[in-house]
Picture 1 (cartoon, rainbow, N blue to C red):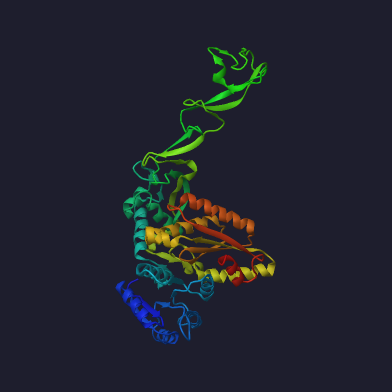
Picture 2: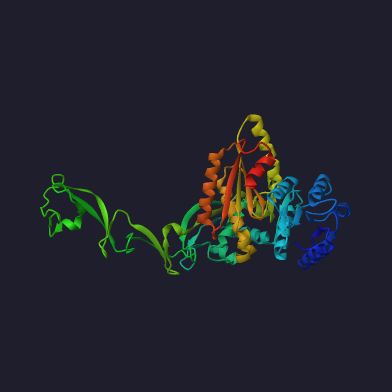
Length: 483
């Protein structure tokens, strides 16, 4: 966010100067401190909007600086990012416990750093309406709110997908596609975003199979012979001739209007007396191949690629309905934060942030100890995040992370607590859940991710449970993360 005051803390003066210069290019008002002590002094004089601190510094490292900032009411709510070359799994755990909002590794990409700063600032942004309520409204959300206002003015409270042969996905939401200038089903991401805000509710409409090569919906699904791969196949009844025991397809027995056994050459007279029809068999008309079940394959009419049916991608479409909260958003012109939990959300992906997760984790663990109950943590990590950013760009990566967050929430119960741990990792707290329940969640996430995500991800999903894998928050987190 332009003109935001950023304080950079790094004992290497040249590094701090370079970071400041780059942030100023993005419109930030950047200042620097060469030590933790100097940073504390500057914060006391004029609190910044965000602090970026190095981890390894003499006298006072980034962790100690964060601890002192968090213990001071003046600076306790200031977002803190860690910019460092050292990011081990133990560092992540310590960062979570201290309340560091985000971290980025050296060497860093300036554009990614700016994007991450914007994300943290958006989460921390607080402005107050005349009624004293908290609001959150970015430039992108202004257009989304205007979209809801436009729908209500037109009386269009329901958005249903329309079939569109020209669309890559086969469906589109015409009003949303026209308003946001999107196509090929990408407008669905905007509707999902608004659903996460509580503006829409949704009902399942259809599941569309897409080509894994080009992503097009125009597929020809057909049955083929397992060996020849020919689609020229017939399903025929089989005949069992009792006297000689021969079993074959009906067309082998048929001679004009009579049934003659091809083995013993006897005429078949009465079903149930000298023969029966025990089942059916497939026959390939090209090769004469016989088989019990055909294979199913698909061919994309767009790119002509053939592939097994199990490899198709799937995209789910929904009918969306404006909720009462959506009408309230349109009336007020902003997304209203109405309760304590919403104040502690990661607004980029609409799951809880690490501060709320840490608080609830301690509460639920204490409850589990007191009442001798179980508790489980599930971690979902995109292990190829850097490759996706490098090959497809940050916008695509953020869209994928948002969709993964939606899949995660749909896989959990209402009492479960999903949170974002870092840019490519989520942790979910499942109170009173055992390893069996955790495995159900893991299986569901894997399945939904393979069906709904536009990009094939390398996901690392695992779980730990109390008391089997640890008795304290640190033990459980270490067991979960350092695996």
